[in-house]
Image 1 (spheres, rainbow, N blue to C red):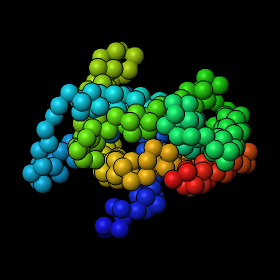
Image 2: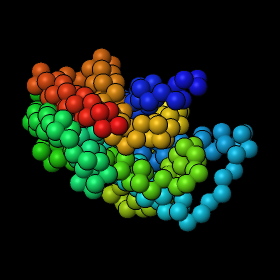
Image 3: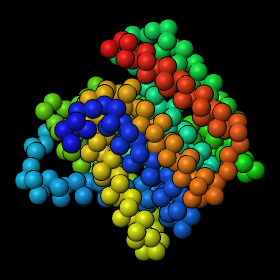
Length: 296
């Protein structure tokens, strides 16, 4: 277990695999009439509650301060509330697998933002990786979702905002990580902050904050809360061990889970061009990863 906790590669696989579960479970939930805001709330409230129970058992009660409260609010909004709403709103239109592919752009966008704000120095390989990833994104976007069911361009554009929000979150959490704060503590605070934000969004009538459909999905609710809680324990540890660019690669692992589960279990079908675009993005991710390792 200690080797897993200290290995960036192992943490990446575990975290990405658990993250990928949100796509098939999200499609099942939205297909049953659960709104994007409600399912996002299920994740954040479920994660916060499960993890705080773990902390109570461990008798670990951290002290709060203004820095942590600010961190919780900002990280909760840009890392969880906003991208999750977009994900679950887009899945019925784009498909679970196609929406998952959007996550693969997170490493490229994270590196781009890191270069722009001076967090990292540009390298030829890193810039080339960004370019290749961008080409892959254009190819994927051009296919517009499932085979024979092209989504409106507006939904494709909305899907492309998912990796942008995640990349901003990756950068923010790195540069504003509170001193002496543990990963579980940060996961609890950020997700409860996201849950509060989602409750406020739910006050808007158009958000359709109806909890009744959840009664028909008890197993999906439990599975989603448990997998997300487990994922975020490893997520924050990976943030500390691997850094923001390496962390952002969980999207590639999650995309693989989303594509495979969508194809095998949810009956989704994608054009060869979609798979080619996803592979091109993957090549860009490998290039940016190699650039990071060389710089390190």
